[in-house]
Length: 143
Image (tube, rainbow, N blue to C red; front, side, top):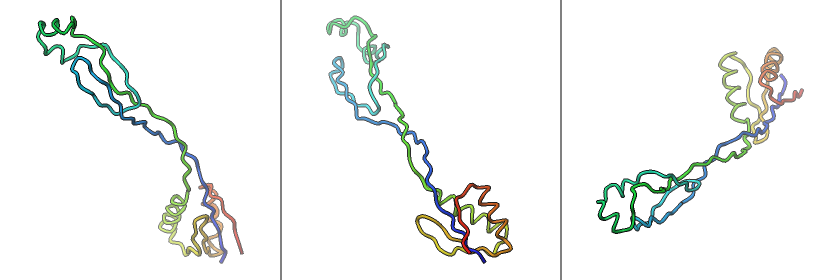
């Protein structure tokens, strides 16, 4: 029976993080504050439904000749964030599937936050190390 210690490693993955700001814009035509969520405000020149609903006389009285104007919209922005994750769950999941597939007598000897130790029978050592190499896990064999 040999003892194999598999060390956990950390890998870096890119995670998309959405920027959400509370944005405000005062609409002078409607005379009200508008609230948005997003990265920033962008303005588009388009027909305003509020001005369309007003009568032409009311618009002219306010000094507004057109129903078209610059209207705000919130923009979205994704920022890449790098996150370190451990392969601990991957190693444990692999070991459970290895036990199920091979009907093995391997047992977990010690489990901590940096590594996991397995007691492997001598007849299974070659197959077990082959699978560890195939998965590119960092391991050491102790007698």
